[in-house]
Length: 126
Image 1 (cartoon, one colour):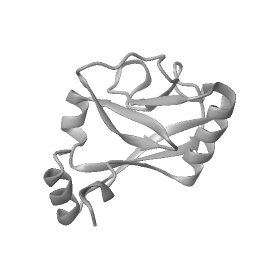
Image 2: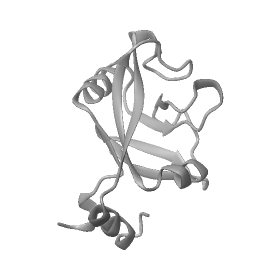
Image 3: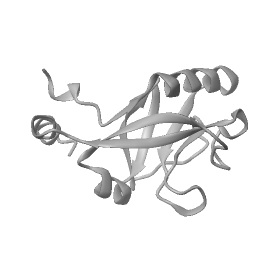
Image 4: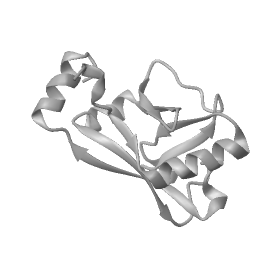
């Protein structure tokens, strides 16, 4: 198993289906794990390039072929967990593209197992 085999962010089949739907309507997408404020800690979905990412943002991985970012400060809280992006019924974030669909993205998480964490650290991603 290579060190890249342990993804830091994954998506459920329901999330992948919504990503495909939104990409069909809006084109390439991007995600940013919100750190609070207006939409709590929901993963936010934007059209590619609609949110400027900078030195304070970390590319955590991809879901549905779309980049997923998290702020460095938020990453410090979540670093030992795998983010699992899911979908639930309800109103999405006011700035997130899924808002009008009647569904919203939701972040779940699980702690990495010791062996997984060791691989992440060895790859420089921890």
